[in-house]
Image 1: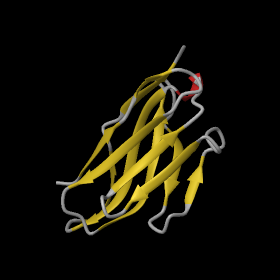
Image 2: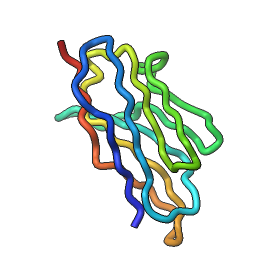
Image 3: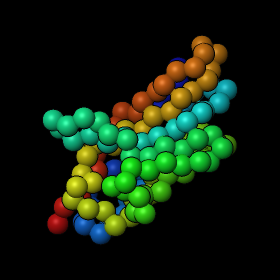
Image 4: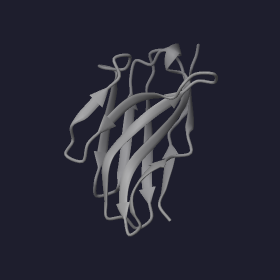
Length: 119
């Protein structure tokens, strides 16, 4: 069974940095687009960044210039480097990926990891 396992969340002061990781486990053929989303209680889940299999990236305006999404295709892992963190970045962060395996193509989600930015 394919799973996405997240790590790297925590508490950080404004201006600090965190790096989130999301590893795809299980036997897969390939991962297409991978991304990061975040959600605050009572709010809609919003897109943070995406990265295509060829490396093209897209960012929400609110994080552009501060966050960097990347991927290691050999490890089937995506990352989100978060710099210059602001209190408004506080959220549960979810990774996702479109995975092709023996069962076909499907969108998978990670379990979520809490990021809290506070002084």
